[in-house]
Length: 287
Image 1 (cartoon, helix red, strand yellow):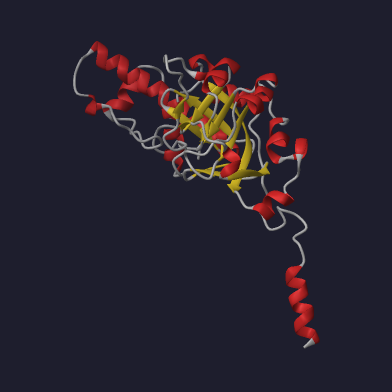
Image 2: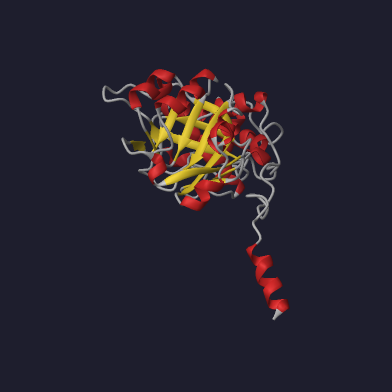
């Protein structure tokens, strides 16, 4: 009987850390030079680069830039480029709320202070219509010159956010209060936005077509593939404008599989692109 009581008591002992049973959160971080190179490419090229490598789709849901009622785009319509700083919300529950750090030590404020002009704050919501924050909280992000904010939830106070100057990609805007349904729980961990997994330090790129996450661990390779694809697509487009006809002669193509003696291979040769200086040909793939 005593042994059973001791065992039961052990099961009731509080967990010492909220991350005690989680895996490592961060292994890589994209440096500023590589971040700028990735930001020079379209989101489509980045998605294609990861696809070529066999990685999961990198686009984060169907998120689009936040717009005001008169069509103004958050961040002025500029491309959003930054390293991920992460924050995860969990559904509201009184006992969990009671154990969450208070005031400036609350996870969202800790995450905010990690942000700078090369950062994108990525916030995992519990639902698309739940608010992750608004005017007063996000004023701090303006002060820190945040590059952008991404969430699979909604934001409040659209007019104020538009004035803050950073890019914002969200499911939409809402008047609802977030604390009624969820609370910030973990910063600096891995988050899941509509099936796309983001780690702190990953590259986050957003434009009119959506938001893409490039994992830091493979970012250099993704850039190499995506940059090469963009070069080839420009050459193909130029050729089709000069000599109108069906694009099927050259396009689509598979990176790392282009045949030297194919019509596309021969076209690229006239532009000085060959297996000697490109990883897009068969036998030249380096991934």
